[in-house]
Length: 97
Image (cartoon, rainbow, N blue to C red; front, side, top):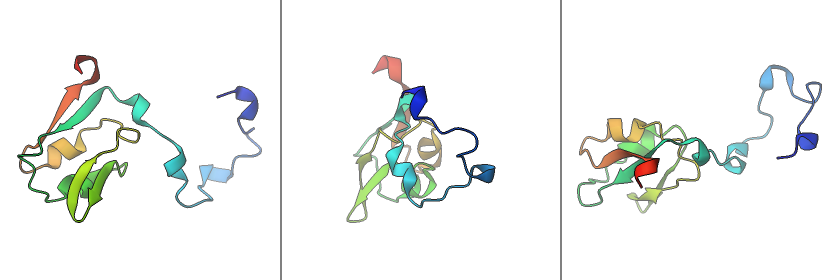
């Protein structure tokens, strides 16, 4: 991103308030990731715990079943793997994939 397009400090809302709902969809944060969640679909019980706990809404769900992980928004925090009661998600170092 060009620095000329960045807002100046006078243009940023006080306290960094978010003035537009849903604007996080425009910011793909997957590039920050060091570890990637890898799902074992056969072990997955579709309990949706990963979906509930994911802070980035990176777990895609369709018809009450896990469809996949949207890596464009997954920062690799590992909360999904930690909360999965079936151990169906493993965090794997990106360099090893």
